[in-house]
Image 1 (tube, rainbow, N blue to C red):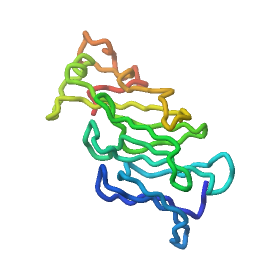
Image 2 (cartoon, rainbow, N blue to C red):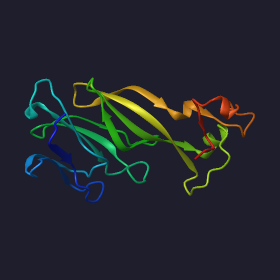
Image 3 (cartoon, rainbow, N blue to C red):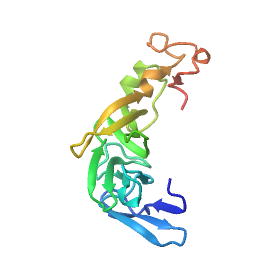
Length: 195
């Protein structure tokens, strides 16, 4: 999209640690920078605006929220969309008792953004789906979900589509569980006991 330029945010600390995103050219000259109150969750993205030129682009910045609901490497929780001049266009956070955004996001050609999240499941929920054992101090299982969010014109974004791996599980351990089947016959499903 913008060949000859590099966009990056140095990783300094976590949570409320202020940081800056830089756009540099091949001569290492800073073309533009954006300041943030929170450290990055992953890489930022520069997306085209309605008109050509850098001054009409938007920065998509995934960041680490101050109080994530699930703590692990790559935790994020929030996304800011900023103008070239650093004004906030919209924001979205996903860090609650059920879900925690982590790692990367994917801006889509239609202006929406995909984000991946952990989905918290209790041990009882996992055992009811045929999980053989849970061996962690939280006594939880973190599943995966993908959300597509769409800017709503009011400074935020709304979920317009979602996918949960929990809806696509198979296992051959618990015969009375609803997802019991021969695993090899269902390559489209994920074995809850494999990983």
